[in-house]
Length: 455
Ligand code: TXE
Image 1 (tube, rainbow, N blue to C red):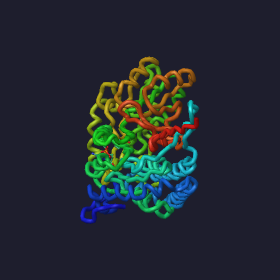
Image 2 (cartoon, protein in one colour):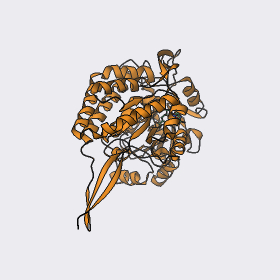
Image 3 (cartoon, rainbow, N blue to C red):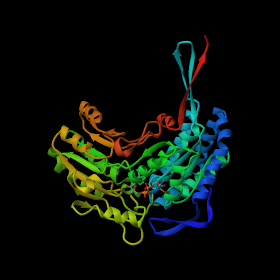
Image 4 (tube, rainbow, N blue to C red):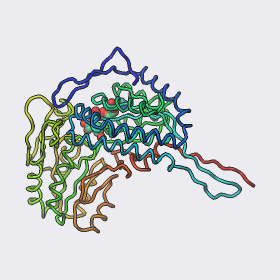
């Protein structure tokens, strides 16, 4: 880790509001030092034989598995997410490194038939890449960027969010223990507007992989423009959960709360607009209220907990500002210390602020629609386009609507968005570029075309 020993970042447990760690805070000089170290490490890292690079990533995956409980507990204490969720996320981190370990020698160039010679393409690493990560899935999102970046032979500067740096620091230590050379992964803990901004502007950084708010993403894109950096942006969402009257309503209602209240709603994929066909509206809303009342909110370290607190007091204040309309359900939340907010369902129109802006908290807008074209119109009437779900027993309709929705990731009769081997990313103002799957490798490499004259 690179840091300025004179300034400290204090990290809190959002369930107790107690400080849990104090870390030195990096500034511009430390960001520059990290880039210099990554630059120095690049030639040797790109030259590591593919099988050896794969072995190092595999070793990192194994170390994550061996330290799974420690990582999960750290993530739970720092983010407030239920321990069962943290365990699942750490499992995914190990799977991500296993996947990209296997991808190292499967992402390659081709030969293209041309006249007068032979044409070859190579997949070249970019060099030093800056990875800027948010606080909602700190370790997971770091791994989605680190895996493909390292597999392609890049070196990295990883900037976790100020509120949640702990698992990134531990991951950096595990990478060294795995044998990944010094300087290949540099974790820099510091403010986004200082360290993040510097990485986005730095002439020696070739690419920024960013996840965060659309507003900050826009700024990163502008800062990166000065040096024509490559940019991948995974930004906000306002995704629709579209429930047709011909769906299995019990199943759809049982799943819907977890599609928006998971991670206390602090999820860019949250299906926070629940669109319901008018003819099934009353029945579905009644089932939804019952299912939402069943979400277990409480101590994140309890195995049975399904929803913990929000990340901060500021986040709670921001989420509260969305609840001023027609509340159809408001659940329970613990009293006392911790940034708690109850599961809340609000009846809304798609024009209301709660349906237009990303709440990033456990508040869902329930919106009726008349028929299939109306559902598509409302679902697409948003500047975002990240994820979404379609619930119907009609297979043709499922595919027809899936093709019509302007969004990067969709589930039919399910509410999951993210899998290690499948591409993840947004349309419209939810960003561009894809993470996960083989597609992520495209964003961390350049195609070089070489023509060899043979005539
Ligand atoms: O995100 P930011 P914040 C949304 C969500 C949330 C809001 C604010 O609506 O309420 O954003 O959260 C770094 N140059 N999402 O403030 O600010 C920052 O340090 C470069 C959506 O945490 O976008 C952190 O590491 N980097 C979301 C990262 O950017 C900068 C995830 C994200 O922070 C920077 C999180 C700058 N000028 C929040 N300023 C999602 N889509 O998953 C900040 N950063």
